[in-house]
Amino acid sequence: MTFGAPIPILRSFDEPKTKEFYLEFLGFALEFEHRFEPETPLYMGVKKGDCVLHLSEHFGDATPGAALRIPVDNVTAYMEELRAKNYRHARPGMPELQPWGTHDITIQDPSGNRLTFYSGA
Image (tube, rainbow, N blue to C red):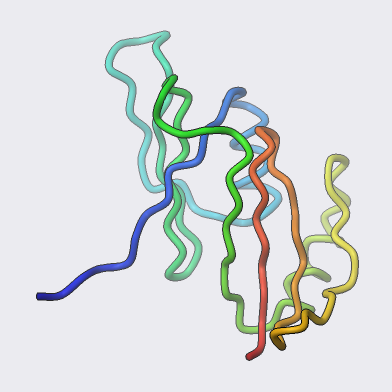
């Protein structure tokens, strides 16, 4: 029996802010958007490298405030790329060395979900 990688579903509340954060700031690509009808909640998928996330405005799909750990080849370079964008809602600091040996930066999305990007160990 083979298992694939999980695809986390994160709660979102504000489509323009969510798209700005994930697509423009973090640099994810939009994979799909789905609505059952016009003006209904958005369910969308984004991807960057092997990292796939789903974001849902549907009540009950997920709880705001989730926390994810996302591996990155070079978290310092990614932090510098993000800081160069001068995004007004997030300015990641230098990666911090964790007791388990990774270097981490944590960024909160517009819905309160915490994304920790890390390298090492």
